[in-house]
Length: 345
Ligand code: GCU
Image 1 (tube, rainbow, N blue to C red):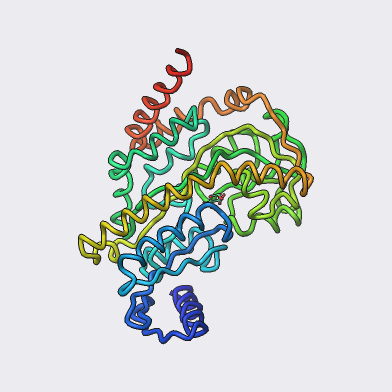
Image 2 (cartoon, rainbow, N blue to C red):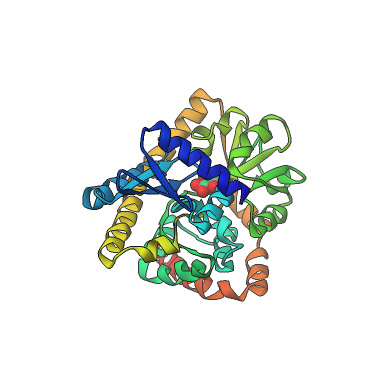
């Protein structure tokens, strides 16, 4: 509650600084007769997700601009993923972009995405996530918690990076590695032999810099957009996860929209995903270039199979412990197989 008040105060100050008169109900505000719709995310303003969200804003304001104004808050300005989800839950803000790891505590079906080596190809990953009809059932799983997912964003493939080079799974032994704040992420890193250290994304840079942790795991954009390449100089392509980010909306807000408005918000969400995907590959290539040429980061190719072998039992352990992931897991395996077969043909 204290936090909610603080965020409301920040939002009110932001509104006043912009010269708008805000009337706060709860924390939702109206300015010049328009409902202000706030979106929080953790990335910089050049990140593909921010560019996707600009499309979301543009599409909605072009159609419903007399009624809604979309405000995007980047860089964890309103708090880290977990805090921002809570704010979305209470309706203090309306949307947040966060990785599925952060949703595990609300609906444990999302644990499936934390499984190491779940998807066997990018094609399979994209096909599963782009199958909107299938994913709807998964997205509904947090309705009880007061929010739901509208669409996904590609967050690439995650690998380990550290102050020291990692060539084999043995090199991870005892290294303190930051993971996302979820039980499955902690188990995953520990299964690799590392000492998992969960913390929010915004804390990682300083933690590596000060030696509190030895490294972390993420996609390549973390090196540049979040500047982790300044403090961790070795990025090893062990490629253990493809964890999607989700655009999450407050349920009351979504249910309060008319059918026509909801359709516009939903189309805007799908469009924002298309837009985000256009930038993703190109930005990853750019990040690799900047990291190696300007930041002195060394990219290390490893024998991925040795890393896969190291955590071979984890998928089955997770299936044994959580019956809610079986169906989605089986569905993903079917899609995986399709692409493995195509490759073999
Ligand atoms: C990626 C992902 C974020 C996530 C972050 C993390 O940047 O896009 O949603 O929060 O990794 O590791 O915390």
